[in-house]
Structures are given as C-alpha cells and as structure tokens.
Image (cartoon, rainbow, N blue to C red):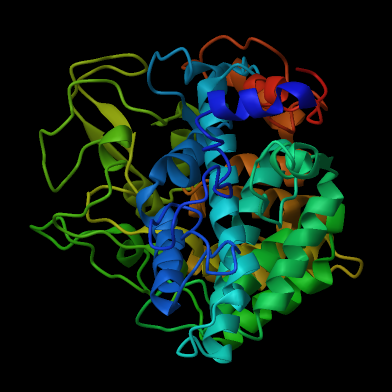
Length: 506
C-alpha cells in the first residue's frame, strides 16, 4: 500500500479530501488552500499575515453557512426519515434506504458526509496548528487564542456529528506534511489516519470544548452565528448525555450555565421558525432560545428549502418533483393525539402537488421549519438542552422526577398544553416516555429524533414496530438490531485506507 501511496494521492486529485497538503513548493505569494509558499529560509508559510488568518476563519464560518448538504440536509434525512418521524420522500435509490433500513456502505449520501466532515476538520486543523507561527504582530495573543478556540469548537462540533453517526472514527488534530519521495513513509499516517474508538473521539471533543471555553467569545444576544462559549457549553451538555462519556450531572451543569448566559425559551414558539405575514423574511433572528444558527438573506439564501418543500420566497421554484423528508403518518398522529396544534402547524404544512408518492396529491404534507430561502437554520437551541436536563434528572444517579416534570411542563405550557398528570409524574418509566414524546414533538424536523432513540436504547422497540402501524412506510429491508445504532462507514473510504474497519452488521 505504501509503495502506491504517491500514485493514490495523485489520482485522488492531490488529496483534496484533506485540506492539508502542498505537493509543490511555490514562491511566496502564490496562495493555495493550504500554503502561501515558503519563506527565505525555505520553510513553508501557511499564513503570512493576520489577513490570511482572518480569511481562514471566514472560510471555517462559511462551511457552516454555505455547505448545507452534510451538516443540515443529510442530517435531517438521517435523523427524521431514518426514524419514525418521516419517510424518505423521494424515490431516489440513495435516499429510500434511510426509510426502509437498507443502508449499505456504498450509499453516496454517507460517503459525501464522511468526506465533507473530514474536509471541515482539516480546515480547522490548518488554523489551530499554524496560527501561532504567524509573525504579524497585529495578530495579538488574545485574538490568536480566540481564533483557536472558535476553530476547536468547530472541530468538536464536526467530530460530534461524526462520532454519533459512525462510532469509531479517525481523530485528526494535525496537519499533513509535504509529500515528496523522501517523506512518503513519514507522512503516510497523516493522510491515512487510524480509527480511534468512540470513547477516544468523545474525549477529544471534550478536550477541545473545555480548552476553548476560556478564550471563545461570550454569547452575543444580537448575533447567534458565532462559535461562542455558549455553543461549547451546549455541545458539552449534549456530549455528556451520550453513553461513552455519560455524566448526567454535567448535563445539568452545562444546561444551568446556559441559563446563566441568558438563554431561555422564546415566549412565542412561532417566532422560532415563522415568517413575517405577507413576507418570506423570518419573524425573528437571534432569539433568546437560539444558541447557534446560520442566517440567510435576499441574494444569499439557503437552497435547502426547495429540497424539503415549497420556498415561500419563490412560490413555484423547484416544486415539480418529490421532496425529501415527508412527514410520517405516525408523527402526524402523535401531534393530533396530543392536540398539539401550535407545534403541528409550525412543523407541518399541506400543499397540492403533482406527485402522490406517500399521500394524495391534493393534500400533501411537508416539513415546514425551513420554509423560506431566508429562514434561519438553527443548529442548537435551548429547548433541546433544557429537555436534556430533564432527561438527566430522570435518568441520573439521583432521580428528581418532580424537577424533570417542571421542565417538561414549561415546554408544554408555551404551546398551550396541560401539565403532565400525577400518574406520569410519579413513575420513572412514564416520565422517560413523556420526555421522549415531548422531544419528538418539540424538536420535529430539527435532526434530533434518531439520536434520541439511539441514546436511550429505543431503536429496536420503536423502529421495528412502526413499520407495522404506519401504513405509509415502504417495506422494511432489514430489522433494526444492536448493529443498527451506527451507520455503515463508506466503502470507498475503507478501500482507500486499510486502517478503517467497517462497522458490525454491514
């Protein structure tokens, strides 16, 4: 394999999958994605001045705003259509397997996500590794520390998405060296990294986030697009609810820290996703509930809207073909049984269509939380973290069902639903079921449902039964079992890197 290393890398387009390699030693000033050449001493210069670092930081933020496929669109396909919340929506051969549990390592969606996540991590690594070597004195120590902190939060966020999908993943925190005939053996491991265990990946995520918190910018109530201290705390709250590093006391700690930072439920649920009447502009940006969100505007809108439904900013644009992530009958029934009209109306909308894949074309449902090209895309919001705190109070070493019930009741009160009954409040099992139901209705089409089922060991019981009771689902290909909790690792990645092993069951 090593003998073919150079050939393989060249055939892959000079290792475009890792933004960390310079095959040519160009004169200083000939900029590439990775290097700005060499200095007079012959040493590689990645960032020649503060402006170059600023540009890399902008590039990192642009990944979150502009590359919507892997961190948003595909996450909804996995978390919603691979759960009981939605159907695949389209008949595409790469999309339907998420509904019928027929996913294989050859799936192009899975491969796209892996590669793009690794590219994102590579961009963060370039900044983290090289920023301290910049000689420009206008790049102050304070700013260097802040930029590194933001890049570490970004890297941790990406690794968290990866580890929840695949479990054992490469944990890359370095930048690959130059590839020459003399350095092939030396840099081999940089470009073909080994898999780390799921626990090791989580430990690196925790390390990045805890190191970042002292130096990251504080929460700015007027700009929730930044990788702030509060974003790090939100991710830590979610991380510590996961089995490999589970510590429910820390979930509570970081949830409480976010409350101290000023986060709370937005009074009106419709302000989170709604648009101004008669307009496609969002009712609100930077709500008190949003922890991290991406903003879009006229001339620079999100394009995923027309992948999921109808774009209110351009009514007839791209509305001639079946959309992804069609709300399931089982989810619709859950909203209706609970009489949850507010969240139902904010989550699902009905239009007339020219197709009838899952419903009559005259009354076809669509997910509605990203309804305009100018809609915000919320990556993390406080209701998610608050309900995780309720989970911690139910499932922690010292259960506090009354406190958990108060949180769930607060979430329900916002949408005009009654408090939990006394019989539910007095039973740990009933409280856990109430929590799962509340998270399902509150966070529908926000990319949480599948991970809730995985985290609480509910995949087999929920998903194997839903095929029998939901008449709209396509026939199940494989039953869900203990191997279903992780996605298959892309076969193309395994073929390229002999250190990567497939997950069991694929």
